[in-house]
Image (tube, rainbow, N blue to C red; front, side, top):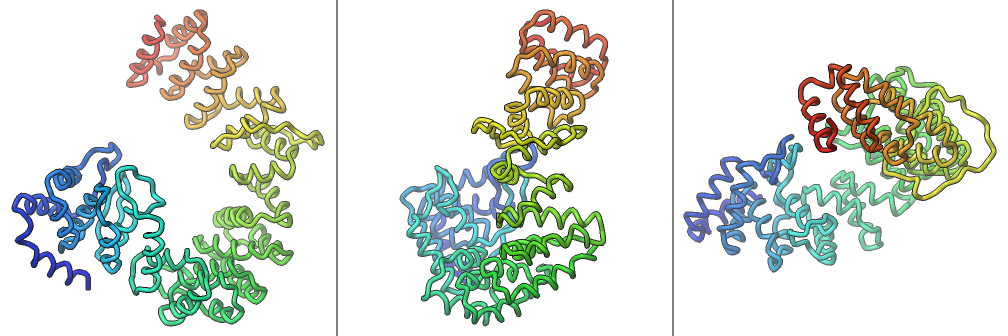
Length: 480
């Protein structure tokens, strides 16, 4: 439908578009992909973005308005994008006219390639929840009005499904949402319908199964609906579906929603079902996915009944996240401290300590491993130092940097011999460069001389790009 409209509009208005503008449009059509200013691993500006810059610079507002109805979807996207840079443009009316614009366009921003409907591109560009100082956003009132249009006016945009799913349940909206479930089999509407917790909808939820071929078993939205409405009449359905997963030799993303649905009950039956995968999963390589999903489901539905399971998952399955760490820390600081030591030092023997450990806000970091280390150093410096020495000796390149930064901040010569020991044998440039910079931070002539002596003995420090980078570091610090 939208294609016929845009074609006719394009033909009708073709005489109003200048020849210069048509040349730019033709170049955009030829590339036929919406690209950002930096694409690929190297972040290079593509020729298509240069075409867009030409469009922004040389095309009038009146022409851009006409081009938002061009027959080519990529041209429509770039034209609307250019208009969105004008703080005085009436973007709301344009977006409203494109809520049935289902043309798929290919996009690339950075390394990410994907496809998106033109109507969704328009809406995402001006969505007030996405920060962008250059692009004019819809006001929240306009966006709320747009959501209403997306709900009540038939469309196939992703934004329409999202508007339905995020809608605040009201008495007025209920019949519309229920009708979308019954007549259109709309899965987003099912999730919203469940928020009403109406017993009359239980059979509707139980009978739901997505028809999409890519919908795995088809119960993704059903499980999400049950999370909103954990009625006892769904339990047998969840139990049956759980047991059907136990002999699978491939994991499914639906299982996370299944476990979240179970965890939403927060009762003994839920505990019983959440324990099932620990002993009943037939394929051990698939078991880890079950356990991870159980863990995430518990964190999404925190409850004292599930605490023992969380401790068990950390201690015996070695699964812990920053959110889980913070939650368990709030329950039992001493136990968290001991498990943190075991997490960072595999040879550590857990002790049953009763002393309440110190907790300070400054110990928390966005990095879980650093947060654990800070917590340990705050309460047990000896073990903390032992961990750092062990990590300097054995840590991968990715982890080493954090431990080197710790040593730099301490300025404690206790770690020097461990640093030099690894420096003598490492063949990894990232490792020896990190260690050298750490040692230089002590600003000690004897240490600097020892770096030079170690370099003579370790031939790896004199090869390829690492050698050149090391030369630069030494030169910068006047070490020769």
